[in-house]
Figure 1 (cartoon, rainbow, N blue to C red):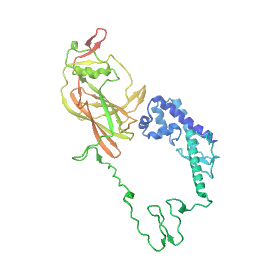
Figure 2 (cartoon, helix red, strand yellow; figure 1 turned 180 degrees about the vertical axis):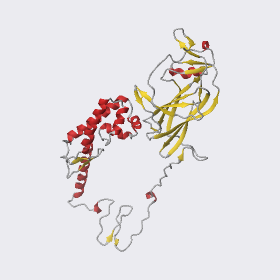
Figure 3 (cartoon, rainbow, N blue to C red; figure 1 turned 135 degrees about the vertical axis):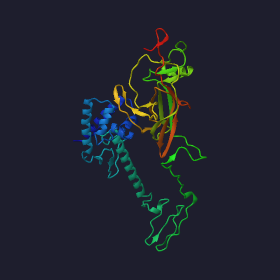
Length: 435
């Protein structure tokens, strides 16, 4: 089988991976986290630069992308051909190159002499662009080395260059003598073989700069007393006015229906709730967006719930914002039961356009280019609860915790069991009892 056939087998396998990936509208980083692999590794698989030696990650990738049974069968067939192509011994090409039989795309080139390559020439027309570029760069570097050696082989007057003719280099000393190089580049007089050269004192400018030690794994964001706290390597924003599936939510308002204005659109929920002194009824959905400040990865280790106050449910009426709606559950969801003595944020499964998304527990990884959106659904039946979240993170040996709250105040959720509940009748333009 020719080299071109091997390249085609790997390319067809990578092309099918890219086709499945493009269905999801997710980034490589987002898919890699769900597959528990490195982002660059997944990108190399989809680019045809590497082939996994195990089909298990490919199978998980296909399931996450919603591949059909026929597509999974075809993906397995192409994977077998790609693995066989990568592991097949390769004959040396005319340019002196050979592919390794591993899952990487490393190429080696051997050049026996200067080679002139036309500007538009293609060393191996059948090879992918990324292999042709590496080979061209390698040959160009070899030509430069040979040209440099040729220029040193003869001087303008026909003499062969000696080590002493090159500035900053000491010439070879005769037998029995040792010659050292002075700091200013001049060659001192030779010494006898039995004498020890005087030690050379380093100039202040030659003293290497002392590097500060990297922070230990136990370093915390909070410094010792009197120190200055360094900013955490991540940023976050929290929206506590999210509605279930974008259209369903209840508020508790201590006012009769005739004094309550019509329900707002979801994007105006915060203004409407503030004007009515409304409290979240039954549940609070917090949409938490987290990302790093730089491209350096930040690991989100854990998400905790802290209840700071409990009392009897708030009095008033429950007003439903929805007229009935449906949709897909957002992935990366967490469920919190505030009625528990020690509530925890529990990862729950979701779906994406009908495709099941398994519950993925922490840790997660974020950066400036790869943010994460978490949806926390805190619910209660029997209390007026005030609570906030704590998010533990780690990055490059540093660890810390950030508090997630409602603009400096705890989130507030009150049960609606037993309260009169109303929905808005758009035809009559008034609140009516919820049926």
